[in-house]
Figure 1 (cartoon, rainbow, N blue to C red):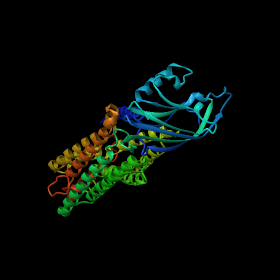
Figure 2: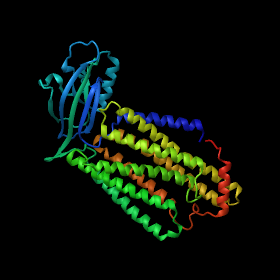
Figure 3: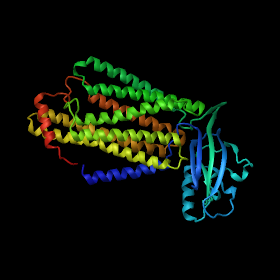
Figure 4: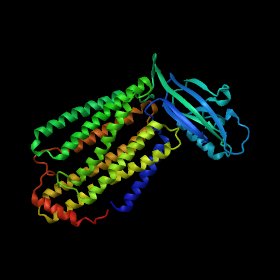
Length: 444
């Protein structure tokens, strides 16, 4: 792949993902949320996004409201500050109106569902409001400040839920099935782990160190899924995760690092093709692992702070950029290994064996790229085009493709006697080492 072609793909990917990030606000890990707004003059502040049924409710408790003028300003009109609900389609129309009118106030729009404004508040500047949803849809909760000369400070407590009989369901419509979905995939990965352990024990004479890492990856993935299932289950019942989100973040953190590291190690042929790593391959790991650490931190911030935070979208873009860098970085070792095998097939007299490995590397390359493309772009596309009541479909598709990716990798690189990828002798190892040294200055 040429450099400029590769760069063009990255640019298109960045643009597409930016659009998806903006139009598909991720659902936070809790639907009972406390947000603190401190000296904020933004015209619109997003708090939550939630899919309501015909028995949906939104509750808002606002306290400690304080206004501060930042410049010479006219008298404050409290009716120009307040909360409203807005659909994605309505948001597009509001943004168009905002560009067309100079002194635009969102409360004049016909596309919003106003809840209340500060003119309705009592003298203590505290307000508790409950609003039943009569028109089921997916809505975003916004606060609007049409007086840009004033900064607003306040504490906001929000609760969004749907009634299922006499029970509150705090998961959005379309995600209420997620606890069962994640638990089912946990059982599948648990069975997968048991099968992998059985294969490794049966073929223990051909087991390499990387097979142990693959076993650890399955364990971390299974633990991550069961914690996510419990996390969603508690949010569904109580509105908060009750600590399960911490366990989910921990196992997700190690799973993400382990997955990218394993792809790099398999792509370099470590433990199979050669028992060592070259300097450039070590540098890839030194780049990918810290970036994965930072990406996990960014993901936690996105989940925990909520979109009302001033720097929330900045963290989103940071997470997007880091994800792109990691995805690109893990491709390079695979390309390097393909080139190395192509060269060794011409020099070591064992062309048939090396060509078999080269074919396997190419399959691995295609599968990795397809997996990254699907989980980073197609899943978000599904989220965009799918009705809000069926948002769980994108989650199911992502987990199904991830499972298929794991099955392919583990099947292709399982510990068996006649796998051409595992066959190595001293003569072949020396040839690979010499070819790799000659290729040290290779630049994609």
